[in-house]
Image (tube, rainbow, N blue to C red):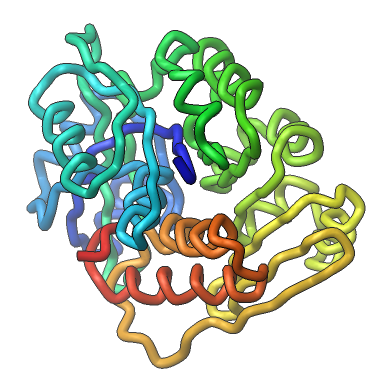
Amino acid sequence: MKILGIGNAIVDVLCKVEDKFIQKNSLTKSTMKLVDEKEFNTLLSSLKISETVAGGSVANSIVGLSQLGNNVGFIGKVSDDELGVKYEEGLKKEKVKYFYSKKKEKIPTGTCLILITPDSERTMVTFLGTAGKINEDDIDENAIKKSEILFLEGYLWDEGEPKKAFDKAIKHANKVAMSLSDLFCVERHKANFLDLVKNKLDITFANEQEIMSLINASNFNDVIEFSKKIKKLIIITRGDKGALAINGDEVVECPAHQNLKIIDLTGAGDLFAGGFLHGFINGKTVKESLIKGTEMSSKIIQLIGARIK
């Protein structure tokens, strides 16, 4: 198997809203907020749903990789409930091998409310549900050993059982890639993420905000110097400034596509990572991999949701 992803198994619920909805509910635009089930349902009750799809950051990347013809798999915790069944069916339909045997859990399958404002930004409100309760017993070490790259998400990392699951997965991996996921995640787990980036990851995906926060950078040159020093492959997306990769002492840049009809930024980073990993795992150069990542993210932001149909 080329790549195995481990991430939060979350059912995405997409809704179009006005900016005043974000302000009224004290949300910070373009970030992700964790809530309990009651708060999630309260928000949802006043909204019209545009689309529901099996999601989660790494799962979106893995589906993109599958659509590009790669042999891929995914581990994510769901409950044996209606959403859990839909989630598994959604992955299998996309030819993703699902290495998790669901059972009836005390907590339901996780859900993410994706609020899309008129400027195409997405603000996420997540009830992690049982996805956030992943533990080392949920990790299929044989599947990890048989995959060329293990791909993890920062959203999944948390003290306690999820951390043990993370550690077990990394221990058995041949190569490890991870997305820092969100500024909220970086600020919450800064010391741990910094240790992962420096010592345990082969490839790190981040946007400019996330990586600058991680190392407390005062400018982007600090990021380049940091990345050169640790001699790992660091991939950074910079919105309309494009993307770049720092690979040892080499800095490779790729411009963003211009004149796109942007509808929804959901999944832009996920599909970028999927496109880059597709190139990387199939022997393409770093530049070619950046180009593929940029192509995939350019496609997804012109659609609603995080799946290229």
